[in-house]
Image (cartoon, rainbow, N blue to C red; front, top):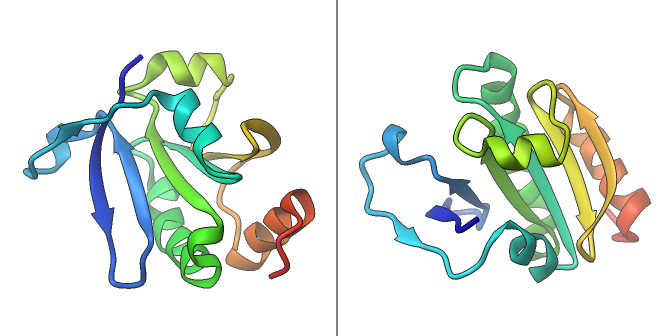
Length: 134
């Protein structure tokens, strides 16, 4: 599966990849040269947020993930996957409710949880499973 992405970069350096999420944004998109497997293997630590545009808790999680990225910087890559546009990935990773976050370390899923977590809880999970000192 090829991924289509919108580069989104806030002043703080928080970057998110919206996979095939084009109808919500009027920006020009480019075709990524990598697929999801390449993305999760590209960084040592990748936090994937499986979400849906119609999901209120998913929208509430966005500023929390921004705070996590602000604190950790480039040590963690945060990727958002729209399950309605990427049904195959949602099935492959058995996403049955949203939001569902999965932490990949060296391409291997180490942790997974559905629902909204607070910043301190997400930071704790990343520290426990990746060895990053927060």
